[in-house]
Image 1 (cartoon, rainbow, N blue to C red):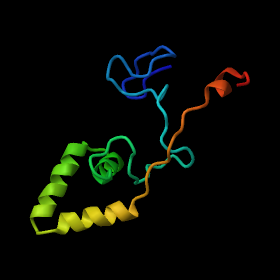
Image 2: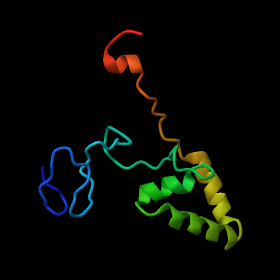
Image 3: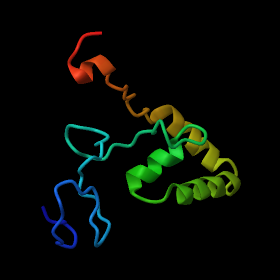
Image 4: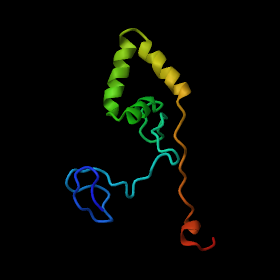
Length: 112
């Protein structure tokens, strides 16, 4: 297997390239199976209030801190625009699906 970014040969077990740090896709849970497109939704794990900023940052591929700072700036100037945008996004953006762990007896193939 070779890195798709820099072309370095990788072991089959590698999750990241040792040269450039690019992910290989191994061992990484894909958030949405299906069409493979990036969906705008609120994550369940990286939340401060409702997950709106984390969802927008993930969708745009930028740091969540940048989006949070922009939302605060929009909330202060022009007055309340950022707050209105945040509330609308909170209502409109869906939550990520809830991933439940596989029961222990189903992993081993035995009965409970």
